[in-house]
Length: 425
Image: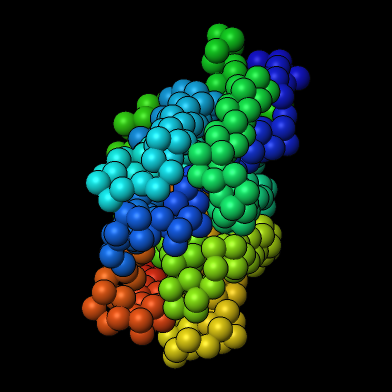
């Protein structure tokens, strides 16, 4: 192998384009959340159906993370990301067409909305593809900050779209709003397809150059080497019990982040009487704060250790939820609790994926798929549970539903003691 790295692009460029793709795909979380209050009456939705529709993108966004995350070990990240963004674009095109045909959609279209929401959610799965893609570009000592920048900046999308989508709806209606979004996603597909390059290992393999792990590290800075088989990476990760502990952590932190991003528009509008734009703005405040704090969380995890940061973040998440529970219609304490939860979830999200390559270094792609995929199911399950809380308890069920987060955080803190095996990163 040459003493000079023959791979095209650079790790910084790869981080930029992968983050850009994740930003565009992750916006699918907000496919319905910001506009649900406006279409609630026309579709005749109960609180449970409301939560299910808002969370529908998270369902496919979670499940597709598993096979597509593992696929990176075989093919690199570029091709899977293009496929996922293409499916998401098809879902957005379908929504634009439906709203063009039915400006006030009848209740009979609810199943179609669920289907199109799940298609929009395909782009969310870009996350688990990007984790190993970025990890293979960066040495392990620098992965914490790189992955936090990737996850944190990409996570800004739902918050930004929670503000933009309601404004677009008020400006031009549903059809124009989803068409603008579709054009943005198609441009992302084009730009990413042109400029993105896979990690040096995959480029060398495509060029037919013999790969020496030590030389690849010295010349190109790639420390982790993929297994080359998606199935093998998944199997190896699945057989490690630490993968499942990390998955539960991510169910609470990242799944909870998605859950609240899709639930808060309903929470603020139904419990506090805020309008479409006001509810979207407070949702964005939470989502953007958690996303930006994820970057700081990654830097802190690099310096203090991922597990130590994770424990503190879980404690903050439980504290924030505990502040919201007795708020009972008072906006100030509810908002204070929300911001404490944003702090906890932002730091926890960064810390979990600092731990993935540390504990499962031999199958990063497979572990990222399992942790990111099954963990993200929290974004689908938790809003339904919170909707059920409202159905059973009425309006007080909105704050009381946050008991779920207190219980989940406490369980995570108990499980953290089983993760280390006497070694803490």
